[in-house]
Amino acid sequence: MTAASRTARRALLAGLMAAALPLGAAAQSYPAKPITIIVPFSAGGTTDILARVLGQGLTTELGQSVIVDNKPGAGGNIGASLAAKAPADGYTLFMGTVGTHAINQSLYRKMPFDPVKDFAPLSLVAKVPNLLVAHPSQPFRTVQEMIAYARANPGKVTYGSPGAGSSPHVSGELFRSMTGADLLHVPYKGSAPAMTDLLGNQISIMFDNLPSAIPHVRSGKLRPIAVTTARRSPELPDVPTIAEAGVPGYEATSWFGMFAPAATPKPVLDRLSAAIVKVLGQPEVRKTIAEQGGEVAGDTPAQFAAFIQAEGVKWSKVVKASGATAD
Image (cartoon, rainbow, N blue to C red; front, side, top):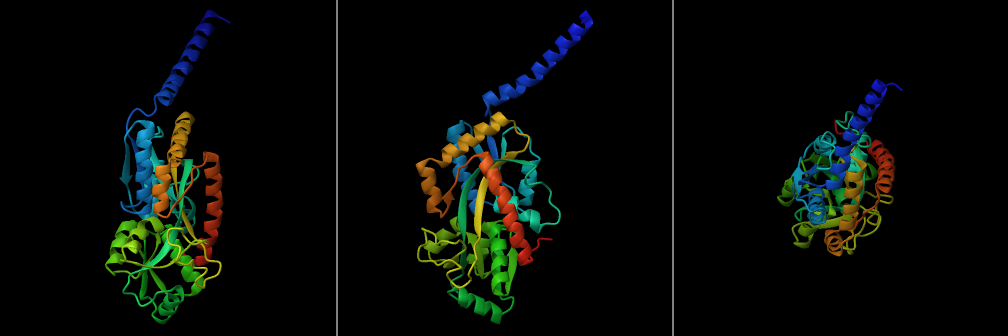
């Protein structure tokens, strides 16, 4: 090897080592500044509630402020697209949902992001039932009474949702396809504005996530009719499931999980995943989520990735069977 070759080789090795140093140093010092969680729905809904509960715990665990940034619209696709294109440095996270990562790809003809390729799954955060609720002035109290009323009054029963592709939307479409009830979908940019109109009797019903609906049930402002899961909710033990109420085989569950942009360095992903699971294991966090009607999760990135894949297959069948579309 000539002197020139040796010099060139040493320069190449030095360059490679220098390039590797920032990544290693960044991983060791992470986090060194505040972290943002993008929530793809408006403030006040279940996605927002869970992000704030988790963010508060991560602030303590990671030693940096965690800020929730609400970016609603297009059934969660606007916020998801922003998160997918964010710098992959661990300082922008995303609270994804069954809509953004399992339903929308079947519901929308064009997606601004790839739910698998553009994101690194960190952990499933929680599963929650959807709750069928009605304004107290509506002339039905049970599932069967609602079906009969909707059939007799086409288009008069309106149901709001956080947006096309959200689990409350698809829950309603599944119900409509299985019962023949004539329901009119009214999409919003989040659960909170839809709930405001339901409380004001501007829409008839919602298949809302339990955490955002349950305070209004407890206050008597909304009438609970049924839950969408296979089992009753421990928080509302007297409220039947939709299947129990006369629609055999009906089941729909919402879930929420934390993601980072796909190219985020693995040491940073490992730090985040471990911190999230630790926070979700804290008794006060578990109690808070349970009181909202949620079932706390907390798993490995590999487990979460497998879960997402299975959910995508499941919901693509539901969307196809219901005939729902967002375009």
